[in-house]
Amino acid sequence: MTVLLPIPPLVPIPPIAVPGEVRRMVRLTYLTALTTLLGYVVFFVFGFLRDLFRELLNWSKSDDLRGYAPICPPFEDFYTRRIYHRIQDCFARPIASAPDAWIDVVERYSNDNNKTLHRTSTASRCLNLGSYNYLGFAAGDEYCTPRVIESLKKYAPTACSARADAGTTRLHVELEDLIARFVGKPAAITFGMGYVTNSSIIPVLVGEGGLIISDSFNHNSIVSGARASGATVHVFRHNSPSHLEEVLREQIVKGRQPGTHRPWRKILVIVEGIYSMEGEFCKLPEIVAICKKYKAYIYLDEAHSIGAVGKSGRGVCELLGVDPADIDIMMGTFTKSFGSCGGYIAASEEIIRYLKHACPAHLYATSMSPAAVQQVISAIKVVLGEDGSNRGAKKLAQIREGSNYFRSELKKMGFVVLGDNDSPVMAIMLYNLAKLPAFSRACLRQNVAVVTVGYPATPVLLARARICISASHTREDLIKGLKVISEVGGLVGAKCLPAEPEKAKKMD
Image 1 (cartoon, rainbow, N blue to C red):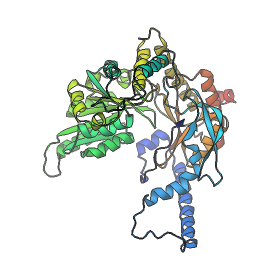
Image 2 (image 1 turned 120 degrees about the horizontal axis):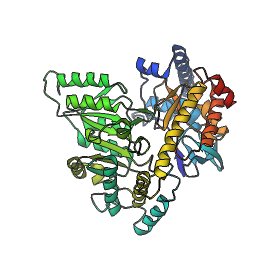
Image 3 (image 1 turned 30 degrees about the horizontal axis):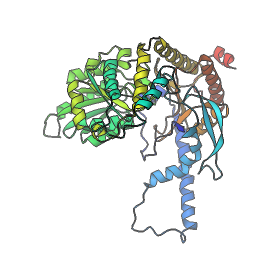
Image 4 (image 1 turned 180 degrees about the horizontal axis):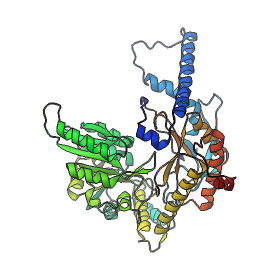
């Protein structure tokens, strides 16, 4: 059984101010911000009062924990009990089918005010607008599936070993050669998990005495890797090449240590191809030009863009006209477009050779399952047309047309939608915490499964519903989803912009 995009683990991240640049981007008015913050204040006040009365009434029955530190941080424990549990039925919804265009969502119930959710034996058939199945390979494919089954007969469900020991098969070598050719780099190395690819590779590439400059909206795996590296970390404003240049210039002048003017051993700039919470492309050509000017290395995370964008599915470099040779480290995952698991790093032969001898994820972690490797190989061959058909080109055209159609229709309805054209990810801004469960539950009642995301996965003021389009969605599926979202958005007050009369009449 798989799970429909659970909310990330609750981490006590303090509320952050929303920069004016972002506020303009999402059209966040002062009234919206005020009412959203007021809602959190009400939750916090009543939550603290309930905790206070519980402590007063049960003071004689409480366990003696003197001398013990709390296992859970106080704020995380409070937020989980008093806010998250109220709406946890909207997250981590289990599904009982492949993550195709339509999925079977297992129904759940609670008899203790949503503190505990119990699964039932029934499921609802819902339109899937939340999975990362961009090219539709995750639900089985006429070319990929038979070859995956054959690989299970020839090899095994798992390699039961690390790559550095006995976990490398001919399929792993073939995949690494294919990935390098696909993205346009001399060599590549694969790992069993996409998150681990970032969190384990970054500390190997740069350490103490180095400088990491990261986009403020980068994924948590990048943040974890940067923190573990021991390097100095600075953040530049999201997708702002001018601020990146400002930070680079300032840090180069200051040097490695304040007052010493000693140079940095290495400077690494990290960006993403598509930012998964916004659906925006990075401004890669401008960032490349700045990094060349200041002799900084570029690390590009293409988890959501590889396979999904570009004329032949080769990602943002192809889409934005950037030579892959200008990108020092190209990272990506197989969990989105290719319907498998794992991740990769593509770079020069020297860098890949170094990673094979120094990266813990290669030396100690279990390698990708041979069946998962075969799935990726087969999917890439379909994308490249090496299966003898043009289905790959059709999938790329379908996801591009479907994404642009869905985004334009949402904007016509009056929704504030984040994301660039051609991106399969788009965010419908809801802002208010109370609108998250209202929107999610109302859509589910009409058999449309959507993912809603709030604090701490997003800033406090920027709660949203995130839509992911797949090549497996037909035009009828998209029209169905738009009709339901339009109706639900009107009910919860999510339409912040004036809708076009013709479109509103057509959807009615």
